[in-house]
Length: 164
Image 1: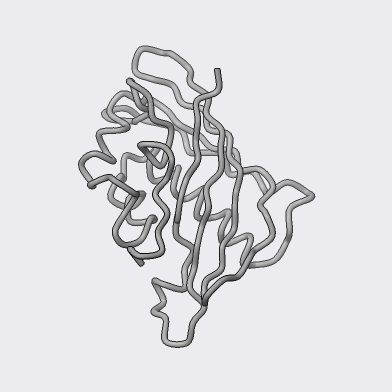
Image 2 (image 1 turned 90 degrees about the vertical axis):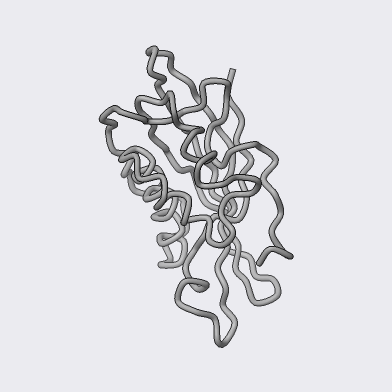
């Protein structure tokens, strides 16, 4: 998968700033569990992809950075080790996500892709609220012989920017 991975244009798959959102040492509320927007496609594949985004932020909010990191599949988020990934959340008290309307699922070379726009709200240890928006692209394999892990939706790339 390394050969077809496009690096994310941001340094972190989630909000990244000098005081990157992280949830070290504090209790964080669960991320948004709202249903997809009424206009979103209602098929099971789209619902599963939206669930990955919500589970990702649920893991981050629970300080389960290993689970969140693994949701990127092999080899993890572009240009990050598990340690740098977790360190990106060192000063985040809370973080939540609100997914927008997903794109249609597109196919290419035995894979399926979906773009999910997101709005992310984070509160830092010093009480500052940060808002981010952007899009996650998720990928899953549909080729014969793909493992169960390869058939599940995984993060593929991210374009996330702080809203000012």
